[in-house]
Length: 97
Image (tube, rainbow, N blue to C red; front, side, top):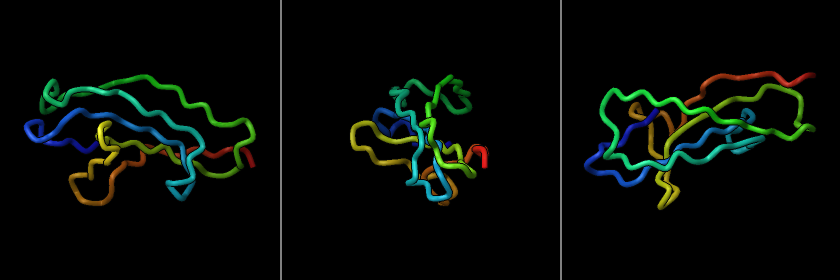
C-alpha cells in the first residue's frame, strides 16, 4: 500500500473496490478508515475486516479486488511508491458463467 511521509501528510483513508477489468467498473466498494497519519509508524501492519456487498445480479466474469489510500479531505489518491498507479490488486474472483 502507498505510504505518505507522516510529516507531509494529513488524514488518511482507504478504499477497497471489487471491480471489472476496467477499474472504473465498480461492483462493490468500501471507503473509510479515516486516521491521522502521524499515529502510524514505519512497519505498522494494519488489519481491518470489511464487507463488500455486490448486487445479486452482478455480471458473470472475472472481478478484481483493489485497494489504495487517499486523502479524505481532497479525495486525491496517493500514488504507489513504484509509480505504477494509485491502487494495488489484491486478487481476483470469478462470478458464475
